[in-house]
Length: 106
Image (cartoon, rainbow, N blue to C red; front, top):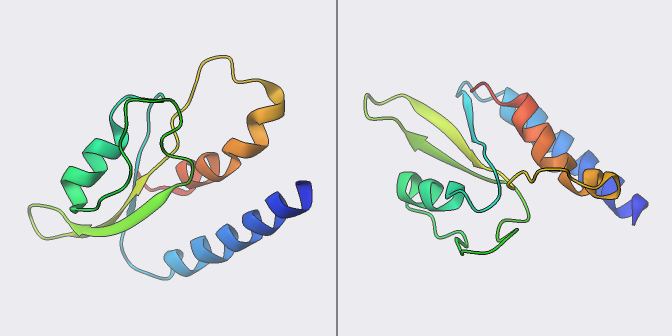
């Protein structure tokens, strides 16, 4: 499992490096689990990501390019929700979201 997580982390690092070459800011939608992040993401992007009334409906960050009302393009990121008192052994599973949030411009 650790090997698989490391492979995923490296792949995400490569994707983030490619995004840094694109001149659009990255905007992360961040909040607690089941707060409506995916619903907002779908409304803003026209995407159809799973948005259910259940814990961890979103298991992986999703990104889409959108234009703001004044025309500026941004990359919008739907992230996995945070939970209070996350058990230490689950921190690695949230690493992708934490990395997306840290690397986001807003």
